[in-house]
Image (cartoon, rainbow, N blue to C red; front, side, top):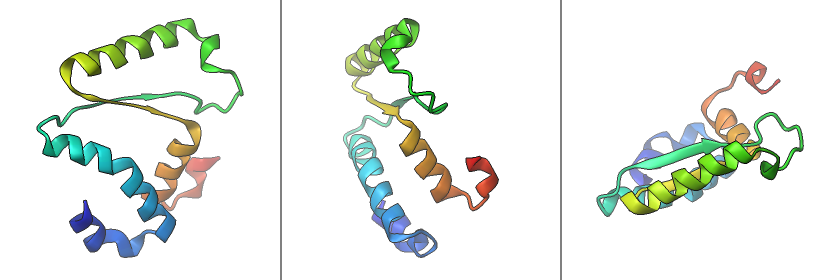
Length: 99
């Protein structure tokens, strides 16, 4: 990761680099340990204020994916709206995507 940041970090804001380090560090550590798989889920991207508990099917799905990740030695990452927005800001300069 540091090699990537060294090569491309100049195009990112400092807080973006810190954000990437925080997100990618456990993923890269997992890869180094021979566990290269991450299960990703997204919640809250509509920003409707509804808690995850309002969606029992999603909660069941989340629980099952977390269990599968634990059984297989994978990482599990539930992305929230703010994290998704940060990724979009980091990897695009097209503000229309944020509307």
